[in-house]
Image (cartoon, rainbow, N blue to C red; front, side, top):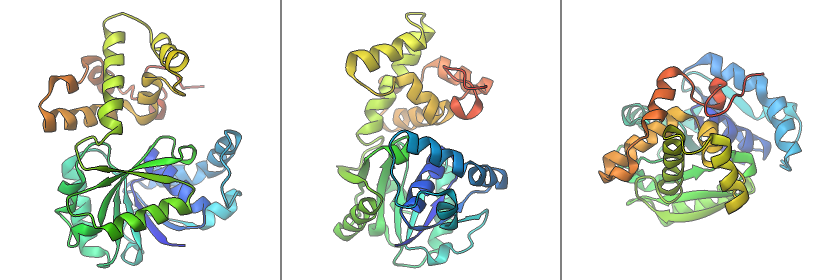
Length: 283
């Protein structure tokens, strides 16, 4: 089993940590917010129960076993010895750049970096690092424990060895990597963000209600979740940032962010993590 540093304890980082620890990996979870780290620690029993009810079967089932594999830090304690770094910080280039510059100074030369970004190209991030061939995209799907595939993104410098190591790591936690070439948004988010954005325009224009739009996707197309349910789960703030990245890179009006999404983010209604988005989540 590897020692893996997970950077960022938001929705994705928390789920990635849970998934890795539940299959025996030693995980160092770093976040600058101690409150977020404590909230994650407190949520482990509830999260495990919920995912088990949905059919997830981890190798280490109890909260005590999983928790024993996780070390929480708001600094860089222990990260110098990590075999892998999985980065999940906010979809903002300046923030990511600062994080990778710190990691480049701290981590050992042989470490591998798995970039769990929504839209920022892997090649751009790898250019910041001492060994760009050790950087690979690992776009986990949400919710992480339940999704069997990971979009693995090969950057300009990513080596065959790094791809092989990424596939081995994913296999150790019950997942399969599908390798794609580097491009802003890759495959999954160039598609999914168009769905989410257009669904928001349909709500804004009064064409249909969120529940009706999502029902058409689920019952008509066979999707497990509708685009607006997915946006709420990801976080509307993350969706807006990702759309802005896509628009910046492609300069294509199809990625122009729906004004309703920006308004909801400004109002603090960013989805499940705030208690309200297109749906209500407060008890």
